[in-house]
Length: 299
Image 1 (cartoon, helix red, strand yellow):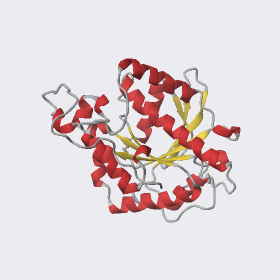
Image 2: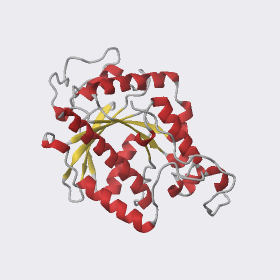
Image 3: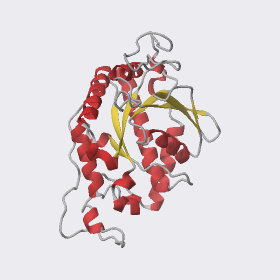
Image 4: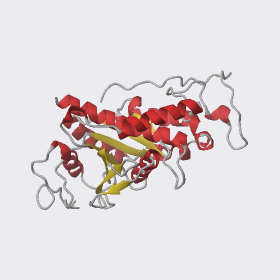
């Protein structure tokens, strides 16, 4: 999985170098670090420039190598963690729309479109693969089938046994059917409540992804619900002690580099917010970049 990275600037000094306005709701002194744990600029002009650059890169994205029509990103997580909300947020940030393809409650895919309705060169799929069996979850073997591209539109996930035959099972999947980047979706606010059984299931899926060489990222959702300072001001996300600690916890729990953990706040059902857009678009572009890394390794 690679070596874990250490957080940058997580030392909490008594005298803070940077002064911020406090509010009655949030004690910033206790909630924020002396130095950011990830570098980023939130100057309005810089945010606008960065957003335009991300929009250009994402809308003009073409899978590297010219051997694949579209990259496939798989978001895997429990019900309610924000998989579908991320797809919606990405669409809002892009100022476009998306179309959900035929599928099932356990596994479905979305085609994100450009502002003119043109289909972009990637597909965002989502899978309910982390719930316990009997609670809407699917077997690790079936997650492996998704990663390998065996799962078609009409595939039936069986509660008693993994499906290796029957309707919807692709025996000879194409590269386009396979997953090119795997993203674990976890709630920032509930990171401390991850059960041993869930950890075991994630580890089993990681082993499958490692064998296939599929890059893995973590989407850490609902960061505003995990930290009052971030809820008060989203641009404090990389200064937040709570988010820094949760990011470190995920890195250690899953043995994933901190740079592979992407904190986001999903859009509410309202007009897009520039700061939210930056986090969502940055995460989406990182997924596409990782998919390209996978395709390059194939060559």
